[in-house]
Amino acid sequence: RTLQRVFSYDNPFVTKTAPSNMLHTGGEVVTITGFNFGASDHNPRSARLGDTSCTDTVWTSDTSMSCKAQPGNSDLLNTVVSVALVQHRRLAFSYNNPTVHSLSPSNGPASGNLVITLNGESFGPFELTPQVRIGGTLCPKTTWVSDKQVTCK
Image (cartoon, rainbow, N blue to C red; front, side, top):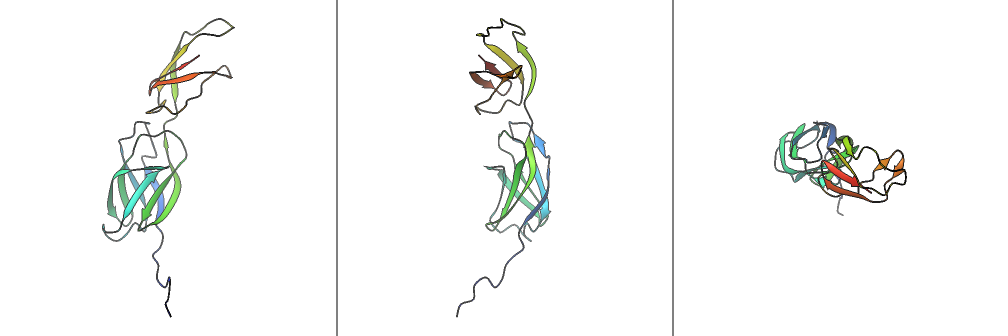
């Protein structure tokens, strides 16, 4: 007779991510705290922010690990820690929301039919199908130009 599942480890548990918010460009080191991350740095271990894997994941202790965040775009993302294929996820991370600093032209004909350029920040590190509303009206065609600019026609 073979016994199965007679021994198990407690699942990892995430309590906090610091920073909990960053620019869409990523590249910052994120410290993840919690418990049951393993007693030593020998288990397969990984971390994700949302669906995107971190790079340069470093185990520090049973209660702390760090990783480098990749570019992304969203708020209320799960921080997912996996230790030996067992994982825990917790809503603990977000990227900055987009902010508009200026738009040009600032006025135009009521009929529309002009291109409006919006300048700001955190529009995303790459094309993410942005949607822009001007006075509550959805722009029929929005084009991502950069993390700092989108256009609306």
